[in-house]
Length: 440
Image (tube, rainbow, N blue to C red; front, top):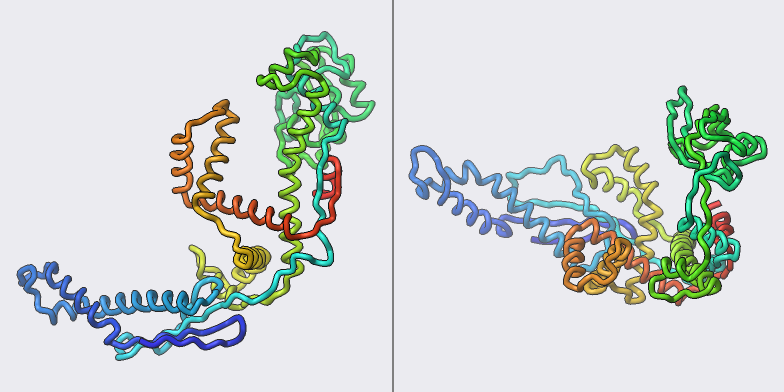
């Protein structure tokens, strides 16, 4: 057997594999001997079927099977030994005149080669790193939310700007019939407010959905419509009032502090504000980190230039999935996935060049931390180590779940690396400004 590689260009190559009878004949003979021992053919005792008959019936199919096995094993071994960094999988070239009755077989495979490139971690245009701070306004709003959650609810005869109203929204044409509880303070505009303030149980309000709420998402929840439907929705609705309530805010005292923090760590309003600020900024940091990683990814893809074997990859995509694609479909799929492929190559090079590795023990610890956080949400603050090990083991046996956790952990490692090795333009913003600026 002989294997050779010919480079077409920097990104494409052809591997040729020549196979002769001596390469596979011993294995074919062994398989046929095993067939002979077990074959059930009328007129012959088991194990006494003439080899000529076995060869005639099974010889060609066994030979084809053994040649294909040898071909795959040899090609894989060659790619490893030659340390070829390929994209996709080798594509066999179709030979119109191929003949399985020949004495010698020649197979050719097209390869798409990964490009060589350098990654610049100090581009001219720096990525913005956001430091999101909890403003006094946000903290005060959260304190009011806490007081409301732990406050006392009482029924009221008529609505004011401080009450909540439960009722049913109806629009027969759009088949809307939704019971909802809304806060009068979320209503937009003086005209709409006049209809609510002073209303009583049993009243039927005639409303227009356009500009009914300060936040369109409140309208979405109130009417039970989809996110796509709610934008620019302008229809008449009736709202039949069934209940009017007002919440008496809970006092900011030690009783409330202990309900919120059972460890007794909060004893004053100032300490409560500090705790809210600390917790909020921890959550903000997670969002800021995700945004930073996304921005770095975009920056690296935009500033790391290299060519790809596009024609080969489009050809490979035609047969790579469960369903074969047309050339047009493969081209469309390639265009959608090209950016992701480029970042995969950049990410792989950064990890290789900087010896960033992921050990299985790290993945297990990460999975256990993820499980522990989830269990804490349901009140189990101190699960046993064996329980965590068992659950982590089961999760990591699921290939999709293991891949998802592995991807998250790699992202964490890369983000830590980027923070140490890249320079950023740092910007301090409120959460509201962060959302406006980043997601526009």
